[in-house]
Image 1 (spheres, rainbow, N blue to C red):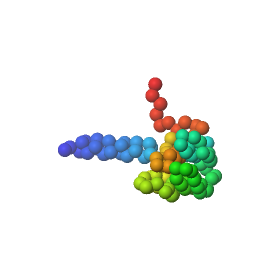
Image 2: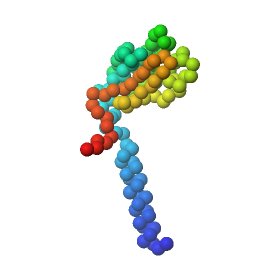
Image 3: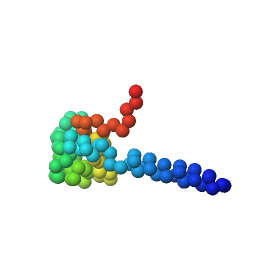
Image 4: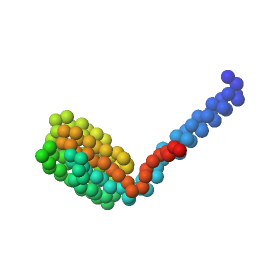
Length: 125
């Protein structure tokens, strides 16, 4: 390879790294967390609703289907306890962005973050 080839390869690598960091820095959705809500549905009906930011609390849900404990802390939501058999909902990662959900199918409990603002990354026409 010639010296010019190394310059082109280095330029491509620097451009790729620059694009990576530009697209992965904190996105606009962090600004929209003030307008985000945690909505808890049980058996398809709204059970309760909380603001995502400014709410640090544990929510205990007891229904005829089972028991779940949901924790909202520092703009993130996590299911910390469930009496269901498989425990998949407890093992799920915490959620913090609009459109993300934690689902406990045996207990028919769905925790979703919804935003007044739309957190879409891309809009195609």
